[in-house]
Structure formats: C-alpha cells, structure tokens
Amino acid sequence: MSELREPPVRDLTPVEVARGLTEGKVLLVDVREPNETARERYPGAVIIPMSVFDAELIPDPQGRQVVFACRSGVRSVTASQVAQAQGLPYDAHLAGGLLAWKAAGLPTEL
Image (cartoon, rainbow, N blue to C red; front, side, top):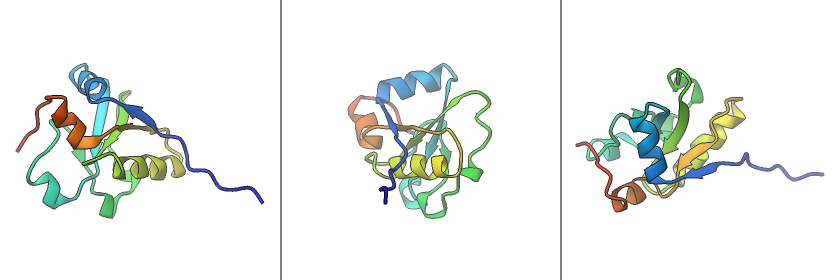
C-alpha cells in the first residue's frame, strides 16, 4: 500500500511576497484568526481564517499568484495543501509568516 503524500508547498520570502503585492502579481490570503487580524494585518491581504477555511472562499485571483500567510508559516502550508486537495493550483506560502515579514522590516496595518 502506498503512503499518501501531502502536496508540495513553495516557500516565498517576505521580500518576494511584498514585491509581488506591489507589482500586482500576488493575492495574499491571510489565514490567521479574527483575534489575530484585529491586532495587526498584512496590507492588502484577503482574510479567510483557518477555522472556516475553504478554498472556494478565495476571490478570483485574476491572474495573480495566490500566496497564503499566517503568523509563523505553519497554517499557511496547511491552507495551501487544502486548496490543492480541492483541485486549485495554489502552492505558495509566505515562509516564516508575519514574524518573518516584520523581521524583514515590512509594514503592517492596524
């Protein structure tokens, strides 16, 4: 019997994601919970909490690359794998999450 393998997820750096947002090439999907996003948010991100996550809730990316993000980069991998399991080609996440984003000196919104 073969072992089930999780779909692969590509790591993107905070700088790569920020550049993609600035250039209009990335749709960032934040999967943190409302209590987290109420305190601090990624600029321009779509918020779909992991507790209610369904890839069908992701708006049409209109040609942009969908990138998942969370606090540390764990839930974003899960979200990507769930989306891929639902048949969508969303295989990228922000490695290190909000912690890495802030460590890179990138802005957040309150």
